[in-house]
Image (cartoon, rainbow, N blue to C red):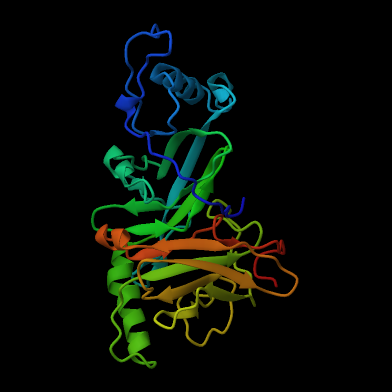
Length: 328
């Protein structure tokens, strides 16, 4: 699955579960039911809460059976979203430092939606395995746009690129949630020293926007590594002279000013992006087609403590190159 882009329609957020009463037009649906916290209602249509909760309960009892949302009628869709929070980086507290296990995750991470800031109050968190689940009740055919924010005490608050939510389940979201010790005592001083030694003597880090330019199969859910598409170049629109980049990561997953194109790692970053703007990023390589990743960077993000804006595979820049790991 690759990143899917779309336009956020003008919808009024009928969000609080107490507004979804159990009263139908006939008024005989029984007592009110409060929906569980990970059921988000993004439609103005009147739907009995009992019905929505029953559909979710039946699916959770038998996850291999699709959500039976057809009983909601042709105008509504109930969509399941799931994602994994990957513990990403290098363990610099051991000697010698070691890359953190590719399969490691981060439990008890708060997950909410930037476009619907009320969702932060739902306190939806990753479980013991590092996964989160949401159910979205929406108008059928009306695409929504979600930028997920990941937040955990003492960690670096991270926001994703914009993801289009349509009428299909999407159960393979992922985020590279950087190890806080590595970030604070490894990557951050490294980047600031790198910039100050290369034409930016007064550089202080404020934020970073990161993409992965990868193979068609590239995903945080896929064990094949490295998943980068070497030799590709990236472009940013609108281009801004106030940002620093692109800076390509080398094969050791380190930002490298001498790296002139995408490495086998696939990582690319821009530093100190101006706020209150929307940015589109894509990649270019002869014979390969790539999607576009869209980021919104706002004052609200900064107020929420976001420092990293990351598009992680499979919702980053995975092109149609299906060659094996490490090959062009």
